[in-house]
Image (tube, rainbow, N blue to C red; front, side, top):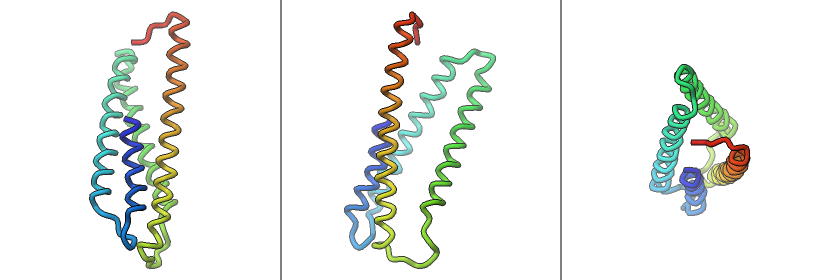
Length: 138
């Protein structure tokens, strides 16, 4: 899942490199949106199943509500990032604006990949710790 999402963002960076006169092929955009949507669907399904697996039956509705609240906050952060990246209203050529977006997607992909690796390492450490303590995780 992490690799699918990261590949979708890297694909946008590659699209910026393979541009012609500042114009990017729509195939890159469509494929990247497809990959990002698939990875988001995987994350949502796994997140909700983890809630149902680990949460007490009386708190399950509350926990799922918190899950969707966190997802909505992620959308808010996404909107704020878009506002920060917004270019001035002056008419600019595509060849002038494309490097800005290309570098943004490169940094976004690097940050997503680094955070994903940190999550994988920390989950492995936590899993080993719980195993040594005799706590069985499903």
